[in-house]
Length: 109
Length: 118
Image (cartoon, rainbow over all chains, first blue to last red; front, side, top):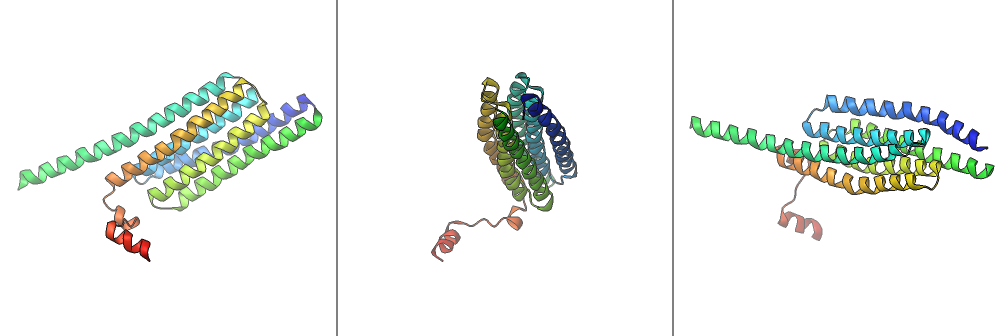
């Protein structure tokens, strides 16, 4: 296999990989929409971030552009940060709701 | 050189395909299971393995250079960050789900001692 044929073959493979990874991303998005709990949505968003990183990694080799590896790293960091913030906000909102409910019950009594 | 290119192509595309197959298994299991902790378990383990295979395939195709080193860095960061994310999500579930006992049996100290003795 010559070098040119090698890259052509990989380009064809990458297109199929993009389609399959795109299908997986859509399924993750559907899971995030369906839910039903907030934690299910956060798990789905976490998975979606990983699939996006895999797509960027495959694209990086197809285009042979070094900066895409940096973008993949930044995406990993932002995805991690998003999960941290979402879980913290989720717990905070739940506690506030619980506190407001308790105060309301105490007020009624 | 031509043989090496062929081996690189087969190995690289094989690893990426394996990663995609594991992603599909993961999304199937996440849809099939009902409780969020079960889902999170599959999502965490599946993500780790599938992403590792995808990155490994990309590195084999790309060859050894500084860009591949960046991909190794991405994988290392991901392997550190993904368990932390799973831990945070499970802690959030534990704090906020009032019906967790219905899905997950939590043993107290005496019960767990009996469990170990048996």
